[in-house]
Length: 429
Image (tube, rainbow, N blue to C red; front, side):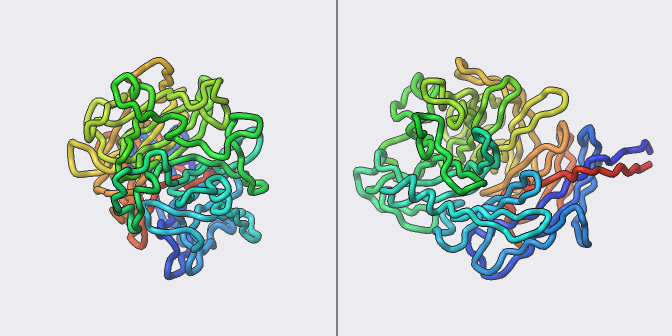
């Protein structure tokens, strides 16, 4: 057997989606992943095991616990020496289709008391007249104008699209009156240094949030109008379009990009980042779209199969120069399993089709909601099973797979991971 050098070690946090304040405490668990420094080429290249003993690399993170009445909602991220968790501590509603969170809690790896940022209060400041506005689903840790921030999604009621029929409809597990408006999505940013709102780039002080509807949407429904805009419909007693994933990054070409997944549009949209560019500088211009093909939606960049609902986005740069976005497709038209798609970033301001190369692989399960995936190498991915409730699965493009069972809670994504700075090398002969 040829020797394999396992010189990359990652620790993957198993972050439970409690779906709101829990009834029992939970102690964070961890996986250890080992694979070649050049990236895995198949599932067999990856050693995946639970951390069951003291591991100094984890530091204080190994003993993080969530008390009664406080659970992740729905995601966590790691930036350098801090683990950030999006929480519902009981101040925001719960169990409304991925909503809602009220706090970002920061845990230092080297120990010390955690700190909290009250984002429920920030959202109320940004949406003072809205009858419903709360942080939802996920967030991304990044830098904006030299400040470390969390960019997060907000679900809010938009009266501009209210239903004139005044019908009562079910929204998640709570009732909402469409006479007040339609549930839409926005993006906000909060400083992780002082807890203040980071405005968009527009204006002297900026706007306190970025509305997908106001800035990149249209209610003129014809082929030309929706070629470069996301369509919205007046009078629909629904939420439009249930954004559930985002990632802010600087592309290799130097453009700052915000990627957003729109579940019920079955697509990922990449735009010029509104926290970098003002409106007159191309703010919110759609640079690339991927997905669609289901429910009569347009198809962008995707050939087959059509995607039926998706979750989450992850941006990755390969040493080879390839730059990609990975998404989790809850369902596709070809079979009864969840899939992932990894497509090349190919920014095109003037294109209506957005051609790109992409890879895809099927998981062994069908997760009706939630889920997220990221690459471990070219053609190898790790994914969380979402509402399938099975755990973490490795898959590769050749059809290989390996599941590590975790059935205590649903897992929203596999994005809370880190690589220790000191990497030992071990050989298998």
